[in-house]
Image (cartoon, rainbow, N blue to C red; front, top):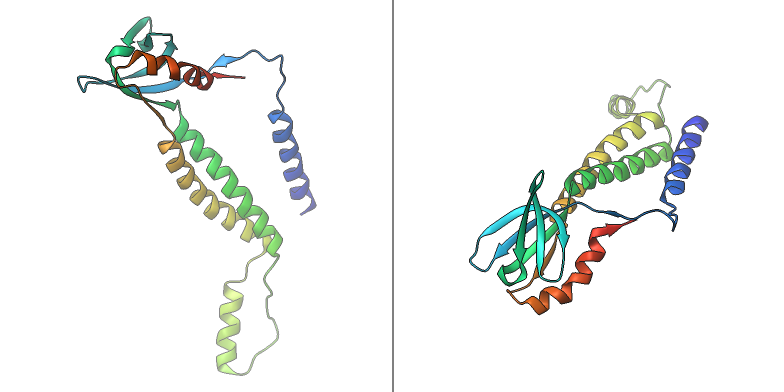
Length: 188
């Protein structure tokens, strides 16, 4: 029990220490999948490579860039690459840790060993003993159950996590949104 608690504290400390950011770290570009709807209702999909005052630049394949002028864009939506997988993993992790901690905190179930002569009480005692679990068994069951539930919820959140921009073929609207789009593209 002490070893498991120590392990959880060490893992939590490691995660918190990795979350600290340094201002001297170079910024890198995030990868986004883009779905563009043009004014003639054509759908264009690809990875967002760059954005400037008048167009979006997509990477269709290696060394194959596609330039879409702002005047041709009705709307476009951006979604982080692998957002569904990341959501599922984060959800599983949160659910599993919650289930493990709750299972360990609830302790062992009591097991009755004294003889019972009443038949109805004997049935109740035998059912209770059949489903009695140790704290470790509860931690495993809770970790798997809540981990699976968390993974499902994380998958759903990752799938719907998109940002949609409506341009309507107006270059001025595109320029106004350019700074917001650039802020989403750059991370530490």
